[in-house]
Length: 208
Length: 201
Image 1 (cartoon, rainbow over the protein chains, first blue to last red):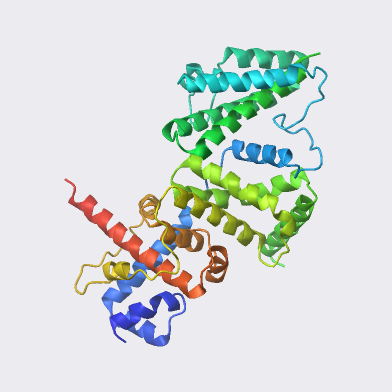
Image 2: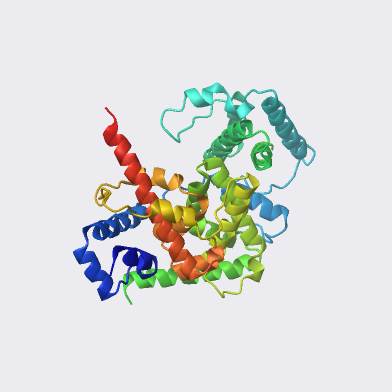
């Protein structure tokens, strides 16, 4: 068997080489090196297996879309208040708050500034990768109101706000870098909507 | 039954139950399916786009398409195969939308065959033992999208050729051929990178 013949059948016979092919590899240094190299590439590739996870905002967005499209039929337990639909005791306040948060966020972005939840304090106080501390005065006040009424809920809302702020930051960066990308723009709108929802939930928990 | 098989069986029951409950609109079932498969889908999208925001958007779109059609899933293929097929389609659509060349998996790239042909007397790369994860990751990013897709599915994610054929819509023979070309291209890229590194003062 020649080198050309061996390399021609290699794609098909990989992992199950005939005795003739194995004999050729034993006798031919260059084809042996080729096989070793390709095997090493294949073995190392396993190390590239998924270790990264998408951020929580991906599931958040999926769930919002599924509920909006009516694909989710039953109420889910309140594990995260991002998606719990509250009882609207003050129905007029909720949509108003959500709209205000959404509009405010869009206006701030379009003017090239930061959205309220992304004051410079968020970045400067980030001490280790992935660790955020909320510095926005509005968010602190909101969390205080929640804690006054339901102390156990503060960490949940704090986590939700942290996640949605990170989502907004990513989405703003992507939208600025890709101003003509519809997906990036839609993603940004989704991010603002999510924050509006979190504010909505928190307000409902804080209002007596 | 070995522990690994038992765990696999339990996982399969749990996924099958989640699928049935998701068909009924169960929110937790959707979330279960998402968490079971999010890493692999995200990893595929990330390797194809090299951009975390884009990868997350594509991941989201792939799962949304899946969940919208979950009522039609009859179990003829594995759920993960079905999901990955959607993810691949979403990725390819995005690449085409951006005007990036997507190598047709049915094309025989004769020009590539020429460049990948081993020259007699050329120095062997002897890459065995010197490949590390980061260098390979960088080289994978430089592969044409079609090669990268097949390589990701087979060597990284561990799909068999018959599954890849179903996911991307090509023949088994073509999947094997494309994988081989991807590996050969990677070998060449790693060789070049190694030579450049050696040449630096």
